[in-house]
Length: 123
Ligand SMILES: [Zn+2]
Image 1 (tube, rainbow, N blue to C red):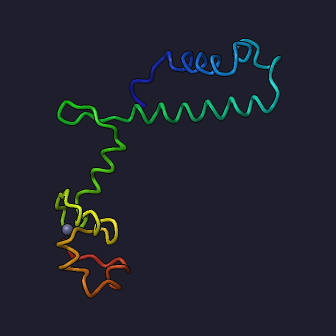
Image 2: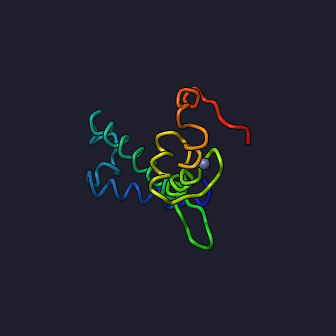
């Protein structure tokens, strides 16, 4: 990951200290039982993952867009003909058949079995 925040672990520890009490961080072993430690590790992992997701952003035309959103957006272009579409009808066929409405008419309609076996037109 790029741009790792060097203060991140410290911030995370503070956040956990706020939630579980200062002793948690100051005397991890003394005040802890296994249950608490498991909770702590779980918390650490969850926080770390959401932190990483936050960092996964790409600059598109000067605007930071999360890659999660970008990945969703790429589903808007048809994998078969590469047409980019915001039409909900294309959305529907994209979800169902992995192609846009036009491609459905052209390649899938009446031949759904062939399509489902993975057949695709030559590009
Ligand atoms: Zn298409």
